Image 1: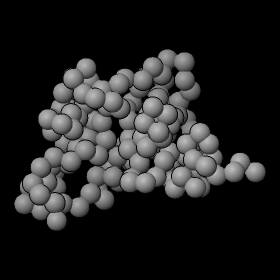
Image 2: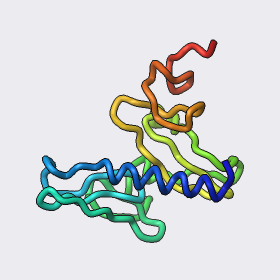
Image 3: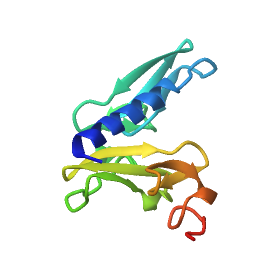
Image 4: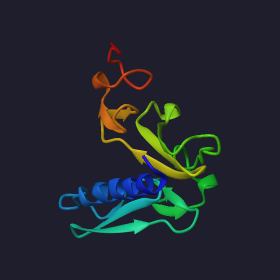
Length: 141
């Protein structure tokens, strides 16, 4: 995937995640969608908020904060200087999230929906039984 295409893909994935977020039966508050984006639910309506600059969403305080004040994975900036453009499973998070690199820069973490893990083959989240190791337990035959 070309650099520009990858960036557009990441933006679209985050946009879709936000669109799929339903505040109808949620209590008022802030809900993490990704490290840089969260949704505020107010009276059943959603508002998307992107953290400015180099801040990330602090899920404990429910605000944008400096990465040094935020627990992993959002508080951990991955070193992408030697990685090709693309998405990579976060093995420290048992593949429940993945991070994206572009032109040697870290673009952030994205989270897999409940019970799924990141598949490097599909560049998407899938059930653990359908993903080859190290993230899943599917046979690589």
